[in-house]
Each structure stands twice: as C-alpha cells, then as structure tokens.
Length: 120
Image (spheres, one colour):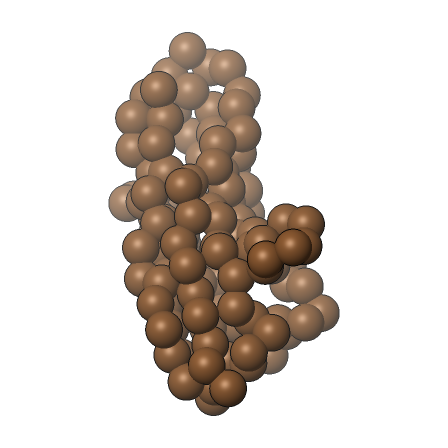
C-alpha cells in the first residue's frame, strides 16, 4: 500500500500565499514524477504542475510565474508554493505520484485532496 497525504490548504485573501505539502509513505521503492492537480466545483480535474525525480518541472500556463513546485526525495515529499493567489485558484488540490512499489510494480497514486479557497 502507498499513501499520499496532502496538507497546507486553507482560506487566503487574493494576492496571498499558501504552501501545500504532500508526503508519500508505504511500500515505496522509488517515486518518479510527482505532481499537483486541482478540481474546482463543477469542473473537471486539471493539471497544475509536475516535477521529475531529477527536478525538471512543468506548469500549467495559468499558474506559471506564480506557483513553484519542489520536492524532497529523501522525504518522499512534494511541495507547491502558491503566490499571488487569485479567486480562480479556488479548488481542491490533489497530489499525484508515479510510484514504483517495493514489489517493483508501477502504480499511480492520489492523495485525498486539500481545499484551497481564495477570497476576492
């Protein structure tokens, strides 16, 4: 079993900042890419940012220049620093990990989500 647990969500005023964390635990041999996705009410889940084990990053156009993804491989943890937040960033944010288990089977795991609400 592999668990991904997000934390750091909350309510913030527009223009403010939040830092999300996602810690992976369980039967992990290696984690390849880790990423963040979000789902706003009435909308489909969308890509926010990803980071490879080597540190290469990719961002959605809507968050470029405002959000920064990083990871600590020793802690199996990925972070999302969100600055200059806008009301349209309001969503449930989900962590994703491309995990290789201790039985060397690839798997795609999701966290339970953390709510981010940006007040205008």
